[in-house]
Image (cartoon, rainbow, N blue to C red; front, top):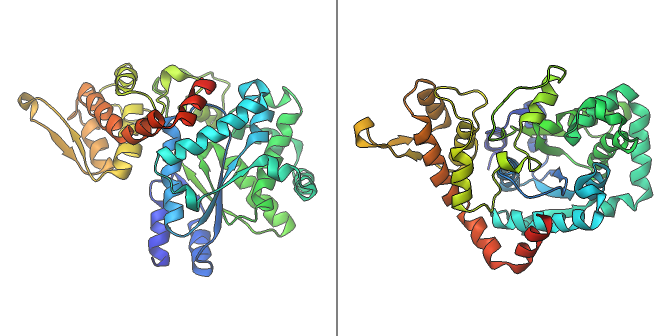
Length: 354
């Protein structure tokens, strides 16, 4: 695959790449750069994570040597599972099963637990160097990468160490590419800024969009920043009633989608439309919306833009869209359900984490 094709495949369906020029120059000079995504083992695997999983596959396909950092210590600092490190480690194993179930070639993916890095003195030297390069206010603004509001940084001092650790993860692993959702943008931008201070390698940052929760936008507190509101609205396992998990049954998927926010002709913040465009049409060439012959019969949609346009013009009824998304999503996740139904260890982990 030539450089241009690699770049196009990587940037497709992302929300932001910092920067495309840097990405192209990287592929021109290195046929197998090193990349990573850091994942907090913090709960059950939901549909929003499938977006970065698809991009992880793309990066591996173009020759990037990807590491999935199981951010166990980060999850502990962030009070996941009440700080129960045994459950956090169990969740890390569950995530590995989930990636296999989603078709990731785990033989080409390096799994690394944060525990392996924190035993190294050099890692903590790096954390302190990063802390010396940043002001307190700069670090406090970055706590949104933890899914927290900026003012929550005062809950306990360890929360302020987290952004420095995430930046050092990048330098300690000598990475060329950082993958994450838009909620991880601040950490990646900090890494690029710190790289200039110490003449480190400046990583390319690739950000995927955040899938909104099934409740839609709702009303946000007036004190929230735009970034905090974006994080508050995303699909989150902490709000299971507004979240689709990858091993949900077809009945559960249908029930959740039927209750979801999906007003007629409204595109912005419509979670059902987002699932159709970012999940279903991301991997399928077409999306069939079944309709009664009285209303024009079935629609075959071949692009995300076409679907958005037709819905905004009122050519697709919300119920028809919901029914089609439920059916297609159930089919798409069938291999995941099959994997978990046959793998006893994976089943036990789901029960433990629930």
